[in-house]
Image (cartoon, rainbow, N blue to C red; front, top):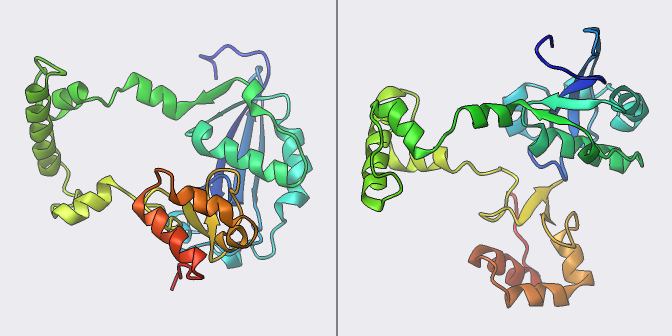
Length: 259
């Protein structure tokens, strides 16, 4: 880190997990590298038993199976050691603001450890990359078409440039789907745990679970039983049609099935 001036250690973090929702998923592997101002490095890495089944789509992403973590320590067994490693340190990583830090904080919260990373200096390499390499239409037009976009932000110029960029992308990248439906899936990846299109409800341990609002983390069955008025209120609000359908069916005793 000879090009960065800093006075206290920076811990670089990367987590592998059971899924992509930092509110409900669990850590299955953690790697921490602590870089001191004098150049010294400390290292901590461990597999972690998440105490829940690892979904197949996550296994395909990182290759870690239930068998790999079956005999590994649970997070609560490592929590104090991890906290001692990261406390009083600034934090670095790739996409840490969006995923790693919220997930780590959730795990700490579960075992009663307070970790307030909002007060730290956070160095997100992904944010640096996106800032230094803008991904707007003007930049894409220059990259793919080798042209300067004139009259940018005028409707006709922008839409014609967009068509040219798409044609160039399809020509340049052989791995891009050439079928419209497959390209739609590429452009709009859906979390496999989402039940509705916006992820208001998710699968958690094969149960329909709220992923927003005051009932986040509760199952739909629990809310039907304990707070049916809340569901009636949702029906009369501006929620998407698929969410309303799930709620109406639930109030009639019909719940989504994962099978």
